[in-house]
Length: 112
Image 1 (cartoon, rainbow, N blue to C red):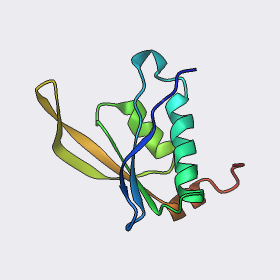
Image 2: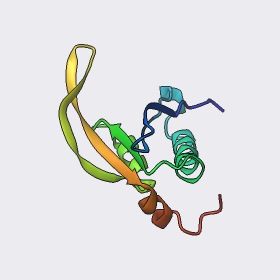
Image 3: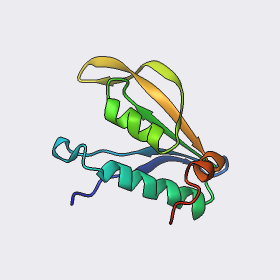
């Protein structure tokens, strides 16, 4: 099984907010690896590290990533226009947020 790279590249310890990112090679898409990794990262952030908010972004045309974030309880908070540039082309990004209280409600009864 490949190792997805869930990262906290932007940790604000005074605000208890992190940004979660995950990258997977195309051959590993749609196999549940990102979901498993991001679920574990969220669980650790909220239950062990005392984080109160996780932020994430996904390209609007990346349906799988947007659906994944929603399935984990993230709330779509808006779209940032021309947020990033890749290969000389700018693109928008959807912004999501997940609060510790929302995580607890969304995952009530889950065995950790």
